[in-house]
Amino acid sequence: MSPSAVVAAWELGLRLRERREHLALSVGGAARAVQMQQPNLSAVEAGKKKVTAANLTRLAQLFEFDADGQQHLQELRADADHRDWYHRYTWLFGDEFIRYLGLEYGAACVSVYQGSLVHGLLQTEDYAKAVIRGGSPYIRLTEVEPRCEVRLARQRRLTGEHPLRLTALLSEAVLRQEVGGPEVMRRQLDHLVAAAEEHEHIEIRVLPFTAGAHPALGGPFTVLSFDSPGLPNIVWQETLTTLTIIERHQQVREYTVALAESMQSALSADESRDLIREVAKEIT
Image (tube, rainbow, N blue to C red):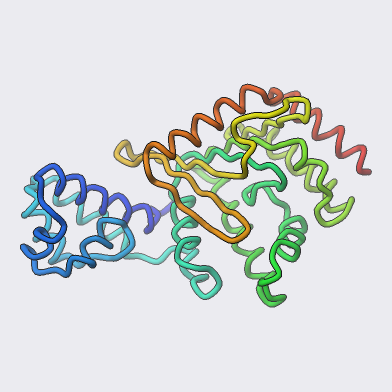
C-alpha cells in the first residue's frame, strides 16, 4: 500500500509546528523569515496545504532540523504530493470528508461506535445503496452509484498485506433496523458474521438493549490510530448536518475512554456473532 498523501501532509505539518513551538517562534515570525505568507504556513502546519521543496528546505534550516530530519521532511513532502484514489471524488465530497478518507486510508486501526447503522467499512453494496438513498434529501440520484463506489473502495483497506485493524461496537438497534428491507438486511447480517469469522483483524461487538445507558450513547463516532509514533489519535464524528475531524487531545481522550468503557458492557465476540445470527434468522 502506498503512503496516504493526507497522512503524510498531516505528519509533515505536525513536525514543523512542534519544532517551531519548541523554538518559541511565532507563525508570523517564521513565515517572514522564509518569505512565506502567514496563512500559507498555518495551512501547511495544519496539513491542509502543500509546501514547495525550496520553502521546506528554508523552514527545516530555520527550525534547526539535522540532515536526517530534513531528509525525512522531504520524504513526507513527496508522499504528500501524490494523488490517492479518493482525490478523484473531490467533485462529490467537501474538503473535510476527503481529508477523512485520506486519514482512514492511512490509519493502522479504526475503532467505531454505531448506534443505528452498520459502519461504512462493513456495509454490503445493497445496504450501502439503501443508506445513501435514504440518508439525506440533498443527495441526487446520480450520486448514489459513485457514493457507493467510494464506500466499497474504502473497504479494500480491510484486506491485503497490511490490513486495517477494525473494532466495531454496534448497538443491538443496528441489527434490528431493517435498512433496505428484510432480504438486504439478512445478507448484511450474514456479512458481519463472515467478516468477523474470516478476519482476525476485524472484531465486532454488540451492545445489547439490556446493557442500558453507556458513555457512547450520545451518537456515532470513529477513533483513528496510526503506526507512526508521532501521530496522535483523532476522532471523526458525522451527524445529520456536520462532518467533523476532532484533533484536540482532551476531546479525543474523552471519546476513547467512552468507547473503552462502553465496550465493557458489550457481549463477547462469540456472543455477538450468536446474536447477529439469531436476529438474521428472525428476519428470514
